[in-house]
Amino acid sequence: MEIRSLGTAEPFITADGSTIRSLLDLSNAPVEKQSLAEATIAADTATQRHYHRQSEEFYFLLEGEGTMEIDGATRTVSPGDAILIPTGSWHRITADAGSDIRMLVCCAPPYSHEDTFLE
Image (cartoon, rainbow, N blue to C red; front, side, top):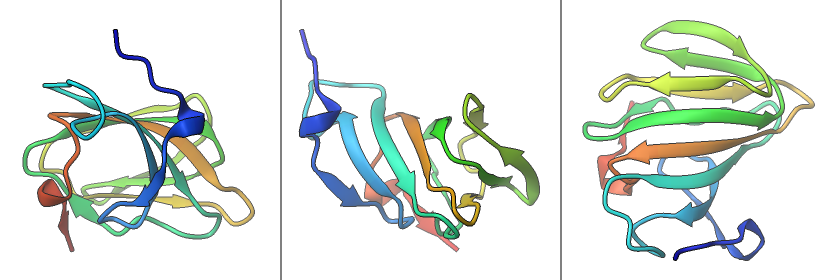
């Protein structure tokens, strides 16, 4: 049985510039096909636009509001929104001024820096 506590997860910066606390991934659990992390985007900032050649992603917003861009299409996002980011899609999320975004990020296959390609 694998159980990880968010409170014990060490934060790190991903290739796209978001701050991540990994809950379950290749570095801390015997996962094979997916990863789960909490990500934060500071108010009035954005992740660097990027894509993944292998991973499909889900974002689930817990706190904050902002704008999600996928392959040039944009939508306003807020807590409770679940976002599908297809494999190979250019994407970025921008936090509104005065509103940090906190979200869960699921990747399949698991997230890796090597699978993140920046614009």
